[in-house]
Structures are given as structure tokens and as C-alpha cells.
Length: 233
Image (cartoon, rainbow, N blue to C red; front, side):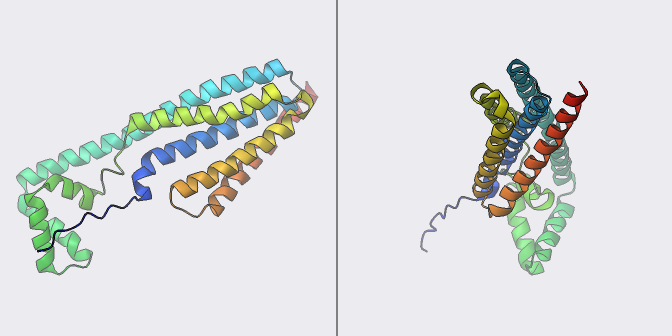
């Protein structure tokens, strides 16, 4: 019999865990920090106030993103662990019922009952818990929750995104900070949307337009609020 050759493919699903956290963190860093600075700048604040606003937004946002991602993904991890523990008990105490359950899953996917039972029996004879986790619970190596990875990725990418509008505050003329930051933020969001979509294997046009639209809306709203409060003050 000819030896089977390993066919290695790289799929976008393998990157879904960290990619989601990275894109969310960078987008939020750009949009929230740029909007904060634009809102304060529209109220005719000085450069020192803008720098302080940007730094506060960067630190607070990075910590918030890290904590939020960690808590959220930890909840997912706890649910997965509970499901796996229950499945492990059922495999030990109800092996025949679990075999029937796997057989039904494969029949629903198109196998004949005889072949489905044979496949289920062979998988149960090997890594039974891994097979049930994958085919019954939908838990795999690529999609398993990783709280620390998600938290660190979100915090780092938020900080990187927030650093862009903050850097503009130092180099742009005070009178042109609002349009300069707006252009820089929207351009960065468009690039990020494009890169994120390509990294995920998706068409880049819709993600790029989507993230740019919401970024522009956030900038406009905060600028109007800053202008209104600045006029009152």
C-alpha cells in the first residue's frame, strides 16, 4: 500500500482566537483615543490637555480591554471545562449511550448507519474525549478559549492603536489637530480593516468600509459634543 503523504494546509480558523482580539483591540484603540482627543480639541483645549487626555485614554483603555477580554474568555473557558468534565463522566459511566450519540451525529452528516457506527467505535477506542469534544461540543484546538492570550493581545493592540492619535498630538499644529487626527485615524482604520480581513481569509472591502464608517461616526459625534461644551464653557 502506498504511504499516505501529509497534506499540510493553513486555514484562517487557526488564527481566529488571537485575530479577533487583535483586531478588536487595535480598532478600539484608534477610535476611542482619537475620538477623545478630537472631542477635547474641539473644545479648544491646549496641547497639554490633549496629551493628558490621550495618555489617560491609552492606559485606561488598555487595562479595560485586557480585563474585559480576560473575564469574557475565562467565562467561555469555564463553560468548556464544565462540558468536558461532564462528557468525561458520561464516557466512563455510559459508554454505549455515548457511542450511539456519536453514531447519530455521523449519520446526520451523511454516513450510512453501519459506517457511522464503525467510525464512532474506532474514534471512541482512541481519543474518545477529543472526538466527542470536537464533534459533539464543537470544541477544538483552534477554537478553545485562551483568556491570557486574548487579554494580552487586546491590551497590546489597543495600546498600539491608541499610540497613533497620541503621536499626532505631538507633531501636528494645534490649529490642525482635529482634521489631522481624523485623517490619520480613518486611514489607519481602513488599513487595519483591510489587513485584518486578509489575515482572516475574507474579502477586505466590506470590513474596510464598515470599520471606517463607524470610526468616522465616532469622530463626528465627539467633535460636535466637544464643540458644544467648549462654546458653553
